[in-house]
Length: 307
Ligand SMILES: NC(=O)c1ccc[n+]([C@@H]2O[C@H](COP(=O)([O-])OP(=O)(O)OC[C@H]3O[C@@H](n4cnc5c(N)ncnc54)[C@H](O)[C@@H]3O)[C@@H](O)[C@H]2O)c1
Image 1 (cartoon, protein in one colour):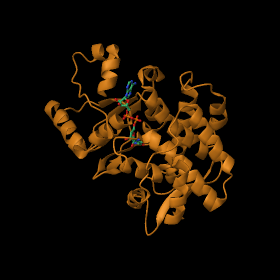
Image 2 (cartoon, protein in one colour):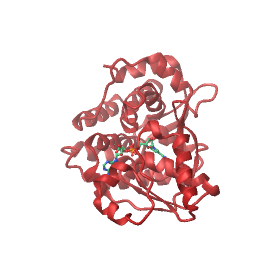
Image 3 (tube, protein in one colour):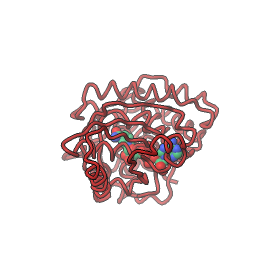
Image 4 (spheres, protein in one colour):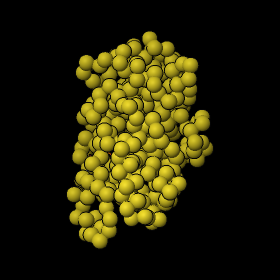
């Protein structure tokens, strides 16, 4: 269980009084094979065949997913997501893994959770920064899918008053639809990667500084600009996205972006082959996967997120 969740929710402490709990300090720097090894030690100590119940955000889910997929060649997994990002996105889809040598999610596998319980009440203790972070993935669903997420977000007064449930449901609907067609990510599932090539590069360039969702939101702005370059996408979609982000107080620029270093990390992305492969938007709700992108276009697109 995520330690912050454990500390914020007395009901969980009471319920787990007589149970074995592995408390996790969720951070990207702990999403490693070393953490997996210590999870194995915990599971080995109790020789468990019981389901592993993971309560926390995307980091907890990814680590628990990988450990449960590989321990004894697989034990059951139950997920209780506690962040907006995990509720609308990472809890479904079965991808799980860890970072390796500073590169995001480089070691991993697929593991379908046996059960998922979503309780948006957990969001009442989630720090605002992580609410904004979850909004990064929700915006992505608004751009790649047909659900009316962006027009609804435009009408929201503030992030604090936002009722998350409809957005969680719309995000999950799109993700489940995509994943059910391509669970092992051999093609169409790449649509979920929109914004993520640049996001993963940003996370590597600013380790432990940007959250995943912050990086995704910035990645969306830059990859919308790339989509304008490649497909002539209407620039008002980027302006609409940026204006929602600004109204919610989300980060829209980074300081001192080392563009060449960012490019080096983007080149390490798992989805590349002989060229850099991005998912880009041909139109609202029309993502195109595996688009070859030239380095110069990336250099000019990231100007969008540079201060
Ligand atoms: N497997 C997938 O398909 C997938 C998809 C998207 C993202 N991810 C991964 O998810 C991770 C990001 O997940 P995240 O944004 O959920 O962040 P997270 O798991 O890091 O949690 C964010 C912070 O919020 C705290 N927290 C969590 N729930 C809380 C609550 N209810 N109350 C108070 N504090 C709480 C955590 O302790 C942590 O400090 C990244 O590593 C990313 O790569 C995976």
